[in-house]
Length: 234
Image 1: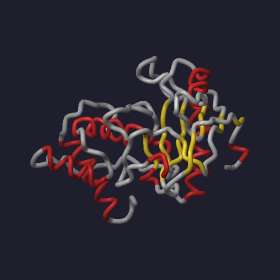
Image 2 (image 1 turned 45 degrees about the vertical axis):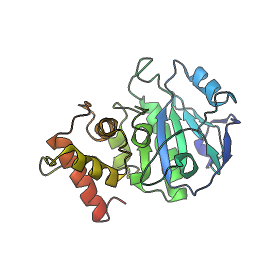
Image 3 (image 1 turned 90 degrees about the horizontal axis):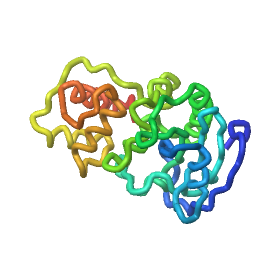
Image 4 (image 1 turned 90 degrees about the vertical axis):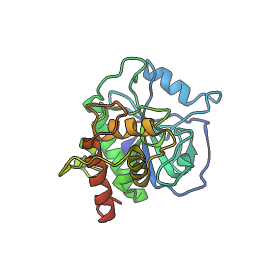
């Protein structure tokens, strides 16, 4: 951790030892009415939740758990064969009330604080843009964060996350099962297929999140898999 990227340190007791090397970053929103409540919960032993960093809406970055330790931010989660996502990831909480308390866009000051922190983490741990994901990507049946208002394209322009591809065509899969298998191949948990589709839409086509498989998201998924097979999205 570069100290110049962090404004303060508030130690959370909620961590244990990693069982895997760091290969991912998971982005969250706090989903609580205020930043103060979120910080208190992330540091409450009874809550048993934490993250490595929290970024307030004014851009204040708080370090909570050392990166070498396993923070408890992802819960039951899965991504690309990894079932212990907490062990393999750095968790960053963005202060935002979330869908239950008045979901709103992420302020520029908050994003401006996230970008250098994320760039530093990605560089030090050699994390692929494919593995910079949202909580909803790794836990589609349970989570919606950071949500459809998060500016993934801003990260993508700096090569900190994958860009939304431009499909050359609409692609209708023969049946839902074929789409689910392709979605699983890209990295998602498809135990709840409809939830996985919503998570995919929230990340790649946020204007319509209905859990329905259509030609547009079929084309998006095809392009993402093609980029991966060509080695451009590993």
